[in-house]
Amino acid sequence: MAEFKGNEIRKSEGVIAARSIILGAAAGITICAILLCALSALIVKIGTLPADILPILTITVGALGAFFGGYFSVSMYRRRGLITGLATGALMFAAIFITSVISGTPDDAVGSLIKCGVFMLLGSIGGVVRVNKRQKVKRAHG
Picture 1 (cartoon, rainbow, N blue to C red):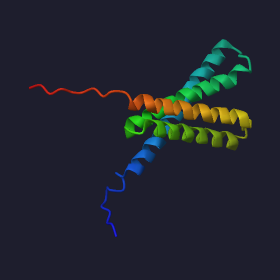
Picture 2: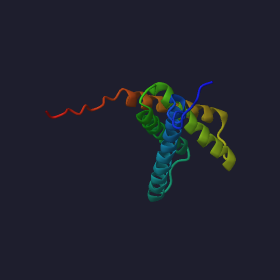
Picture 3: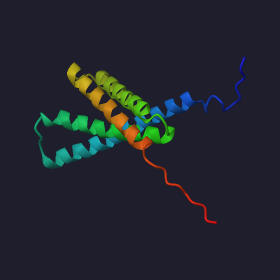
Picture 4: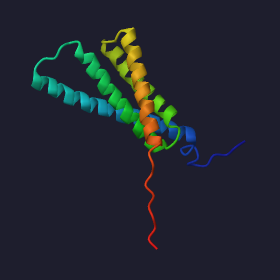
């Protein structure tokens, strides 16, 4: 039987991936909240907006949050950008969908599928962008 020492469980690859996905989704949702606050301040300043444009704006804000959530999660995990970003976008969608169902304002099925696709697509794009970003190499003076 294998023996585990104190920190081996915390350092396993699955735990690191799960932690980075959860923190990336939390960062993406935080970015969504900040952008929605800024958007609501803009709407108050402008006055009224057509009701048709609000779903487009909320999906756009969610997409930006998913992009940065995927980017952030891959910056911690540093590998598998597509899968990590995809999982981050899916977790963000699940959290926002469950919150909307609990609050009593569920979207229609087509709107939910569109949001799910957009969140997962932009999360994976953010992950791929981050994993392909080159690291700066520090040169030693000598």
